[in-house]
Length: 196
Image 1: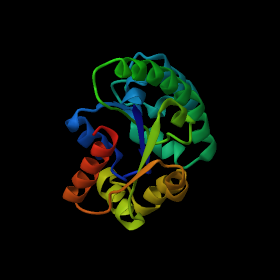
Image 2: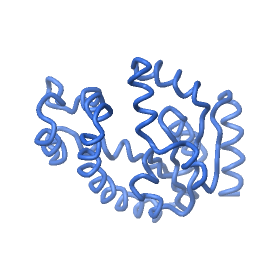
Image 3: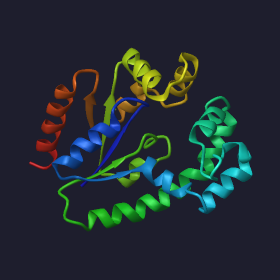
């Protein structure tokens, strides 16, 4: 079974994926695939530079994710151009990697993808888990983790499909507004339900 894991920014998707990995799941991250695709020397990075200019590069020629993020979260059209370029490349790579993982011995394959619904990637998975979080806690996490001001943090929250819409499309829900031990217990229950 392939379980898609999604949720909005700072909901704890990666933490849930990590907890599932520790239980024996094979985990694939769309964000990690994106990092691979924009590594120095990769064609996708060259295409990004052609679209947005060299201002998105670091001094050593890598992608400056903060610079690109500031640009695309402030401009809907720029974000759409980015998505049209990067998402087909992620889709192609993820399908190959998921097929390889499914052929392996893991009792569960988890595909962590923040934009699972937005890009139609739910077709690649058997079931979908949405990780949710209370809005104020989400905002606090973003401010702390990403060193953004509140305006920039809210812009990133608003740029995503609403948590309510994702929740309505979920097969499973985990609310990550509590403690780590609460989250671990919820992941343990889900594991038992999915794997036995």
